[in-house]
Length: 307
Image 1 (tube, rainbow, N blue to C red):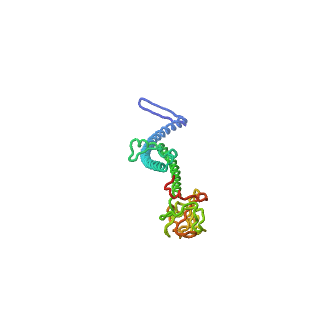
Image 2 (image 1 turned 60 degrees about the vertical axis):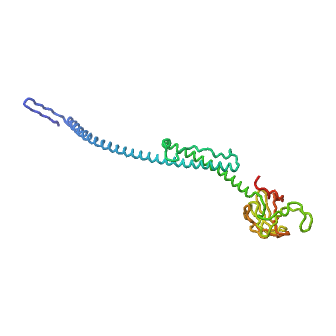
Image 3 (image 1 turned 30 degrees about the vertical axis):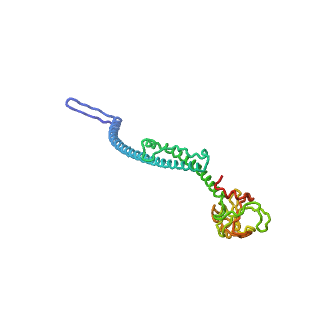
């Protein structure tokens, strides 16, 4: 099978024959050109659409990044303001700690509250230098870590200082001093004296404070009541333990106003003066014991402050 092309004019005559193979090849070539031409037109249109879509996506992403940056800067600015507020509070804690340490006569080298936290920040609106700082989130994180470490150190110092001050308060309150009555007079001293009942020399292991029946008997130091009842010779007796081996006794009371186990404060009314037990008149027999042995209470009565 062949295909013949015949062209005839007045001057020319053209004849061209194609074999079957040549005809198939020509057909394939023509179809290929048509396909490529159609494909080329479609690709340009798709590419333009894809470019437009990509551009709109980039614009949207840019807006999102700008919003993220703005929000981040605002958050960092807020964090810096918060850090500045915390720093000012730390300064006030430092001042308070130093004042308490000085008033308590503590070693300043052991309670050095003046070390400043390694942070910075404004106390009002952000300045240009701060705005530069807040652009670095890592710097803010480092400042927060340093401040937390500083707070931990100061917390430990203040807890130790609090413990010492509380101990001082306890020691001051339990420190024995003063008279066991609010009104009255010293009627008998500590030491050898003539027994008022038999006239023989006898050891008097306390002080007697005389007064009117019903006069308030007060604790000379804070402590715990370990006895509040009648005892031979003492009549109605109150015994208070103050710690550090010290105990005080208050005898011959008319009535008792505390019971065993009560915690009493210095100057608190614990009894009313009377003449119970081995007594010749209204008075309170006052003893001070140190590690179980009576000592002369006089030096504790007439001291006004700790030495």
